[in-house]
Length: 125
Image (cartoon, rainbow, N blue to C red; front, top):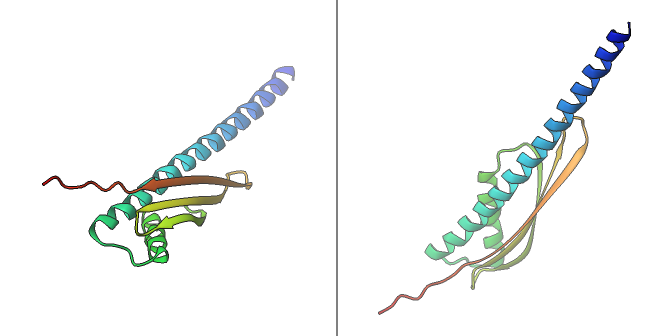
């Protein structure tokens, strides 16, 4: 009887350990994915400026959101805040917030802020 109770307790501890490890790994994976996706979208938006000049700050923001949507594969609610955008000088400062449900049904939010400036090189004659 004592062995059965000990076995059940160890089994419960094992299940909780797996559950906690899974939640931590999922959170880390989402954070990494969001960081890379935001970085890639910002870089892609600024790289597009080399080929064509954006007409307005709003157009630059729209293109960033479009680029971000093509990057993100997770099933979460995404909120994008454009903190700063300069379509003339090539500055983009964004804050992206991802809200999702963990496997235990709790809402978690991850936030990534990325600032980038387009460097322009002068061609030597």
